[in-house]
Length: 387
Image 1 (cartoon, helix red, strand yellow):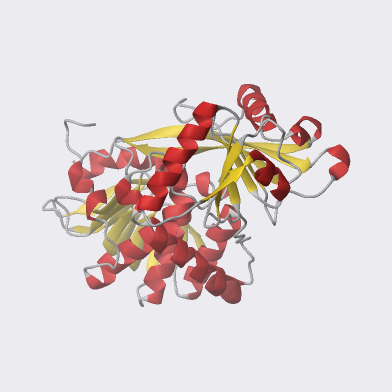
Image 2: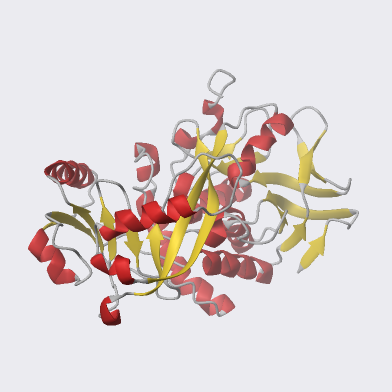
């Protein structure tokens, strides 16, 4: 059910601001705990990064923060569970795909970087297999002759992020969740940190006993409402889509590829065209696509595979990622408030960490605790000195 913000008043157990992956999964996990929610979204479900993400379930695309990495096994388990649960509830296949992933090197410096990466992952209990260039090329004819070594990972699946987000919200709707289209401009509070809902741009109100702020790169706007810093910077990420493999359309790509020297990736998708990812640009809230990013992505990808040069480009997208001040997401209760929770700042890993974040927030709201160690992610770590 979708409502406009013209409704004068609405009430639910929990008000969720943001209709991306974290907001929708929070609504879903709350419904599993018997709590109702209203999702407030300015543009539409999955209208931001959650709708145009590459959908790569990896914790290694940003800062490799230890506190975040510690949550990766739990979120991967939750993703596997969602793969079983959501399609049965909604009928939506969200493209969960546990294919292998190769990080490749073309220089000795790249080899050293991969070896260090392998050692660090082994120390965390995540073994990865070393491959020579020949062994890597034996896995896929896509890989060029200049690859001299690679590291194989078997635990970084992909999903269709738009379908996953839509499926999560539809499942939440089945449990009583609703959505209201409109913009939030503030919190309703008696002034002593006790929240009772949110105010909409047109003056209407939505009431609830708890508020979850899952606003992605727009989360910084909440600092004024909270009287607490929310240091989030938007980062634009652009993707290019390939409709054909080139070279006579040969075998389809069935493994993800990355070149460690510049970070470019080629990701096969079961339900969409192959993705070439991804740029990292600081341009404010500009979500336009650029020829510069497209050309750079394709040049980097061509170092991985000569098929890129003859492939057919089917599209290009851009989204905004929420980058925190210290590379670690903000998840948990906001200081000075009885029931306002932040869930933002996951950089380009929001789809990956979406389930564990949403499950943690739902647990805190329903039970006052959660099964995941999110203490290092507490919003209390921010202060006016580090904005």
